[in-house]
Length: 74
Image (cartoon, rainbow, N blue to C red; front, side, top):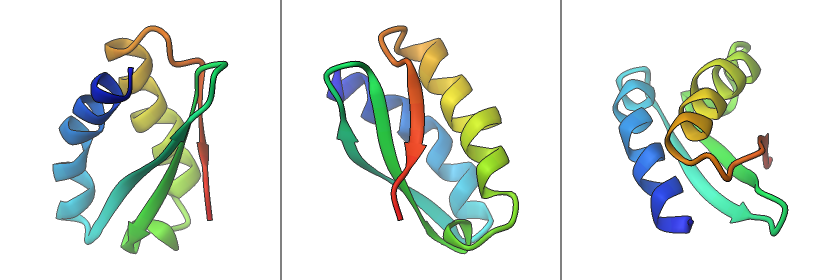
């Protein structure tokens, strides 16, 4: 599952990097929660919560059905 999640994150990464940010996979829990850290400009962006829900979580659930949720790690 980790490889599939990483591949999904790699499809999102160019969009984040275009705005001066990035994303790092921190952990995948046994119950399907993916924990990520937003880096660079994305780490302090006021729209980070929206990006996590509307972009990251949506894409991960589409590409990896085992993913139940995405949580930020600070």
